[in-house]
Length: 350
Image 1 (cartoon, rainbow, N blue to C red):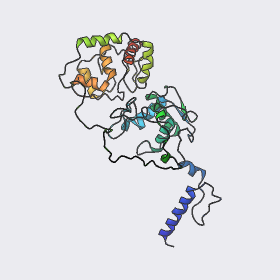
Image 2 (spheres, rainbow, N blue to C red):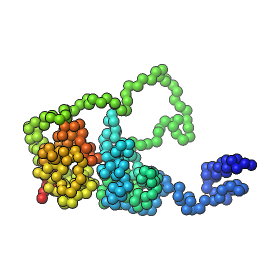
Image 3 (cartoon, helix red, strand yellow):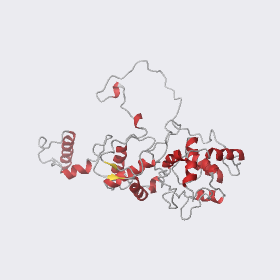
Image 4 (cartoon, helix red, strand yellow):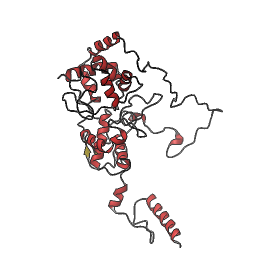
């Protein structure tokens, strides 16, 4: 038999062995292969199921994961998980799945925390897959879950709890109930089929002209004085106790009771401070332009920023969206904006 045919025979034999039960005593092929060692099996048997089965021993917290993320992940996914170029956004997107252009992230779309771990362990970092330790992978998983408001900052993700963490979109993943989609097969419904299929909607709109929104070009008029007055008055009615809970969306990047910067600048003493005014912090160029334009943080400006950070700052410098290097897309509820500002005013006092 030629060398080529021997190679084909060996490959087929190994396929038969792999596809059947792992009982080497019952499957022997003369001169072909050998029984894999426990270490060899361990090297490829790394999958973690949705229920957590297969998770290796280890643990990690968001604080530990932040350090790993900045070194291993930020160059592709952005310092705030905002994505860059062809690399996807990891954080945010909550409530967008029904939008014309949904933003699918770990927080808005991903069904299981255990498979976040599984994917990172198998495929990340890009170009250096499977280089992370189990503890580093648990820590990265914890950091991404914390940044998406799934767990608290001090929660330690381990092999014992990773299969029990409930994701925001988990309930929307379920087994397909159609008979023809089941593992055992079934009879497809072929009755009363339509003669013609017409596309009446598309998942993505490519129109470049916005359908809504105001003038964000240079020289656009600022919000009327009475509107700013209303924003200030609304902010003063907020509940600082409730705002502390809202601040959970911010504390992954910011501290408010200390001048020490984290991934984002410290918010200590933010009221009355010029935008981009924290010494020693590296702001984006657009954020620096906003500060140079004279924007000062008060109840009104914070209300506009917290609702739409990129759009609000873009309006200040005369462009559609400003690059803030922030993944945070803005608060959707006016009550949350009022409460957060009330808390920030109380907690950030010098």
